[in-house]
Image (tube, rainbow, N blue to C red; front, side):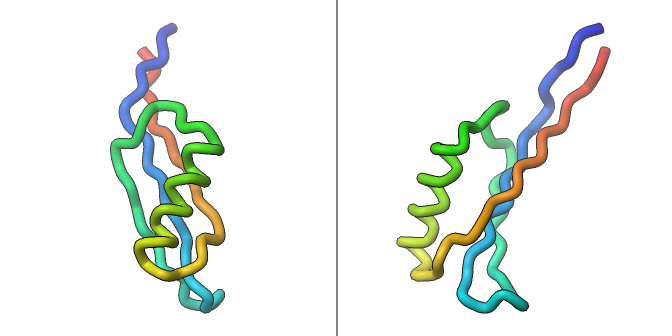
Length: 65
């Protein structure tokens, strides 16, 4: 069996309001992003938006053939 990468989606969660966070979704990211890369990009988004960066969720889609 072979696993083929299809896409990776990263959802960045920003904002000071815990009940209503701001979510920025990045689709078609690299296949295996490193934690340092995600943290750095979250910091860039925080600098651009003026909102604090809280967390990120990574979802990867693959196909097994």
